[in-house]
Length: 221
Image (cartoon, rainbow, N blue to C red; front, side, top):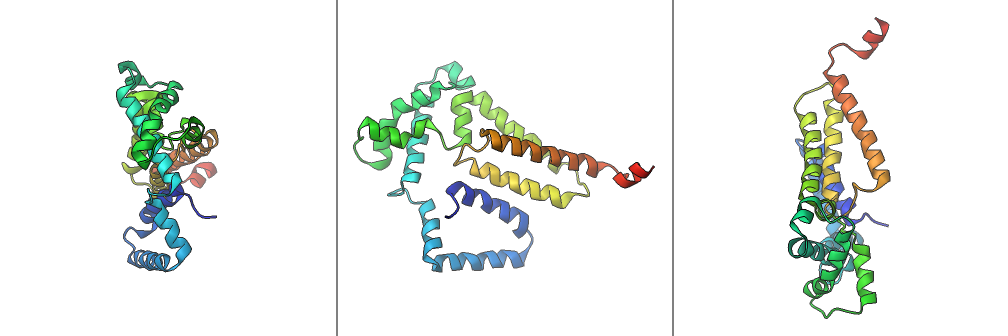
C-alpha cells in the first residue's frame, strides 16, 4: 500500500516547509532520496503515475469530473447559483456535461450510461475548491479562502515563544490545502472535528505565547 496522490502532494510541501527551509543537510538528503526513488522501480512507477493522464483512470476520472463541473458552472448555472451555489443540484448539472467531458479527456466515444456512472463517482468533485464553488458558489469559495487567510494571518503576524510549534502547524496547513486540490478533505465530518481541535490548540498557543507571565508563575501566585 502506498500513499495516494493527495497524500503525496499534500505531505511534500509540509515536509519542505517544516524541515528543508534553511537546512542544507536535510535538503541534500531529500535530493539523494529523490535519486534513489528513480532507481527503485515501484517508487518510480508511483511517482510517474501522478502525472499519467493516458491510462491512469484515477487521474482521468478526476479530469473528467473537474471538466464537467467547471463547464456546468460556466454554461448552466444561473447568476444566483454562481454566486451562492447550486447545492445538491451541482451533481445533476455536472452529469449532463459528463459524457462530453469523457470524450474530451479520453479521446474516445462515450460508453453506456452504466459505465459512465461508474466513472462519475456520484459527482464527487475530488477537489475541495471546486466543491465550494459549485455547491456554495463564489461567495462560499471566497469564504473558505478567507477562513484560511485569517488563520495564516493570525499565526504570522506575531512572534511567540512557541514559534517552532506554530511553524509546524502552518506547514501542516499548507499540506492540507494542497491535498484539497485532489480530495474533498475539509467537508468530511471526522476531518472537520480533528481540524477544529488542532485549530483550538493552535490559537491557545498563540494566546499563551503572547503572555509575558509564565503559566506556572500565575498559578503559584
